[in-house]
Length: 134
Image (cartoon, rainbow, N blue to C red; front, side, top):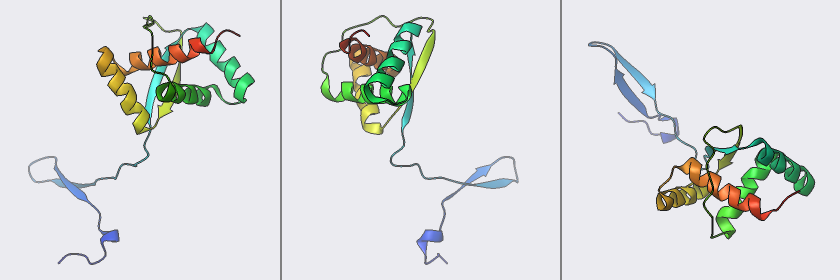
């Protein structure tokens, strides 16, 4: 007999661990607005520049500011010059992007035949260079 109220019906997957033991594991739904984490490798000077810009221009945290810069670059910029990717990064900044921005970065990474991290670094350096020196 099936349950009438589907709200209380949970999805269950059976996992067999040995011959006679069966464990039931509940499958969880993924959020529709889930964000992807990406780390951007930077030198110490570049990170200092991001922190100064975040404080001076918007009075916000450098992580959120980097996120906004990256989103703006993906939305409005169409030329991203090649830059050297640091082999041994001194530090990095983490950004969390929505799926639509991540897909755009993934498309750029495929076009440039590089990883998503390298494509993110290239896009971020292009927008950071456009902001000039402090």
